[in-house]
Structure formats: structure tokens, C-alpha cells
Length: 316
Image 1: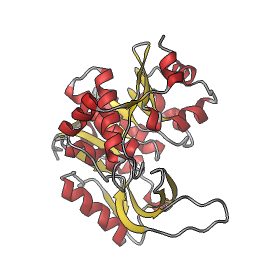
Image 2 (image 1 turned 45 degrees about the horizontal axis):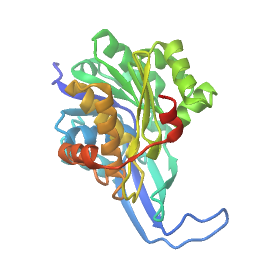
Image 3 (image 1 turned 60 degrees about the vertical axis):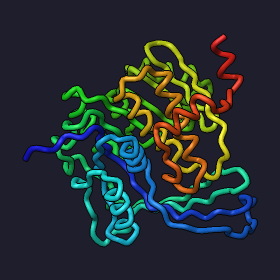
Image 4 (image 1 turned 30 degrees about the vertical axis):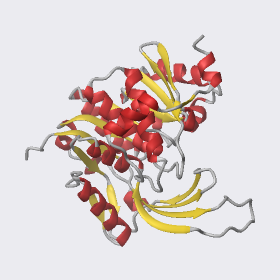
């Protein structure tokens, strides 16, 4: 059976997130009133794919959902966005992955508690090669390392670029890293994986050891740092009125994929990704405010940047 072509295929996590907004996050043993609560769709790869769809790309999600109402909500959310879910498996008698997210209204920062049933793990044998290689880009989160590695090997053989969003040091993650073309990891992952507190040295170490063409880290409100063709590029974050930082990294990755497929130069890709991530923080939820391309471009043009002096100083 011939698989239909898409721009981006994503293999990895989805989640159903319960958001609790509080005035301030309480200290250990404290108590705080809940201002609002809501159940919203989220997840690393699924949110990145929704971002790609909002920007006009064709997207396919490969993963697993539970057969409870939370899983059905996730599938409905992807269907509304036009994401191809024909290769998404529904696991019977299994709850979908959940996140309990406490949002501090005073800062927009969030604390995440999560759980994922073992039956939601994706196995390499459950993948369809044609569904992977018929895309222009493969996006992974590395959670199910065996499945992600198999998908990445197929993509590499078919000359499909591989992008990875890593924020957790999963067991055997080193098996996946040599198969990644564009590593866009969290600061926490890079520091924990290398044991190196210096961000510049840590990125150089990963690039040298695993021969990744591009290695970068997202820095939250400070933006992003990329090692590309032997040189570092620092893109400061944009100043926004943050309501909730959930999903900012996922939206960043979706925007990164869009810029890559558009053929933009790397600095523009990073600036655009930072703008999209920043705008998403202005509303509640992982997909709270996935902006349009014109809105992000406007922020790039007139927005104020939050320049981290330590990173900026390294370029002088």
C-alpha cells in the first residue's frame, strides 16, 4: 500500500493536560486556591505537529493514545487540525498519558506532574516504513528509543532529515543521537547528558561525539543557542506578557521545522522559532496561542529581545 506524502511526520508523545492556575506556587507543605482548571490537549510531538499544521505544512502523527475520554480528546484535537492520524494506535483498556500542570499566574511558569501507562510505549515493530520515508522531515522526542531509532534509520537511508526534541535522558538515548541531523534539546537534557555546566562546551562535545550537523539548546526566556557548521549562533528570546510557558518548546520545534523546510538561514529560523514560542506563552495551555506566521514575523521586527549578557558576551 502506497503511503501519502506529508511534509513532516512525528513519532513520539502526546498528552492530555489538566491545568490548574494558582495565584502563586505554594512552598512545600503550603496551600493555595485554584483560580481555574481546564483539560487541554498537549504533548511534545503532537503539539509540534499542530504548530506545523497552523503554519500550512502537511503533518502525520505516529504514536499511541489510550481509549479513555482523554485519549479521544487528543484524537479529536489532531483531527480538527488536519493532522494525519491513520498510523496512531488506540490502546484498549488503557488511560492516555496525563499531565497535571500547575501554572503560577504571577510569573507564567509551570510545574508538571505526569504519568504514562507502559502499554502506551511504541515499539519498532509497530512502525510502517512507508509512513516515515514519505515525509520531508522526521521529528522525534526520543521517549521510546527503540522505535525512534528505527524510524531515524529509515529516514537517514531515504535522505529524510531527522530532528530531535530531547528533554529527558532516556535509557540508551545514545543509540539515537548519531542518527539525528538537528538536535534541538532542552538545557536540562544537555547538562544532564554531558555533565558539563558550560553550555558551549557541552554542545561541542555532543556534536563531536555523535557527529550531528546541528546541535542546539533552548534556553527558556533567554532564547536559544545553536552550534551550526562549527560556529555558534545565539538568538535571544522575545519579551512577552507570559501567562503559561507550557508547550513553548514544542511550538519552538514546530516553527523550527517550518523554517527548515522553507529553506531559511539558521539565524532566521531561530528568531522565528523564539517568536512563535514566546507568543504561545501569552495564553493558557500547550497550544494556547500558536500564532500565525505574520504575527511571529511582526514580533521579530518590532519586539523587544531579552538578551542574556553571558551568552552575548561570548560573541565579542
